[in-house]
Length: 303
Ligand SMILES: [Zn+2]
Ligand SMILES: [Zn+2]
Image 1 (cartoon, rainbow, N blue to C red):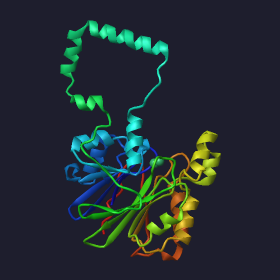
Image 2 (image 1 turned 60 degrees about the vertical axis):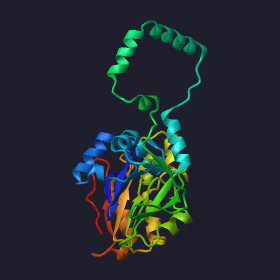
Image 3 (image 1 turned 45 degrees about the vertical axis):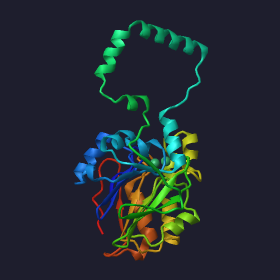
């Protein structure tokens, strides 16, 4: 597992086993994603697929451009795909005045057919892509609760409580090596199905979004605070710690804390809460705690 970025300004993680490489989320610009992959020695051409957790911008910002550039299939749930397409092609209701304005502009454009043709020829973007910003080389659908495979990696998607169309976390199982890695970020709380899914994982990327006090006293407007704190918002340091203390089986090699808020959290607070929760189970062999950040990739975690 290599976390390229984690946080509200962009998320992306590479999961690799044997000859299979999957990019989970593409929440940075295509350019930045390629730059970060190069920085950790991942070759973009080696990617077999892009897998999307949910349609929020911090998980899909570079998706269309990257997928088209690399010509790789994108795996979504059907609802997430639809929500993403809607987001890129918003339908606006037009006022009469706007409609007249548009009609006028079209007539003017039609009066100058030569210059229109000239600009068409200059633009090298294929017509299909210009017409459809949501065009992808290939789309595959999966469903939460139904395992599927990409190359040598088995994937178990599970539903997470978050304010998106059909958000999912994932457990990845490297078939040849019986190693399991999981991603669970963007969740308002840890429901029973997530506790169940996260049993027996070797590496866990877990959300530790905010410190409750910092969020309450912080600069966010009240409505945003309510959203973050809600049952479909983000996991606090305390909630992550409670999961680690009560429900986590203690068997992981590494726990990565991710999706830390830059406004409402401090890395030391997130780490302290998690380490206290793991308590005596930390050792040289297991339960190492790492923090994934927004600005630079994390060192690859290799098992
Ligand atoms: Zn997010
Ligand atoms: Zn989200």
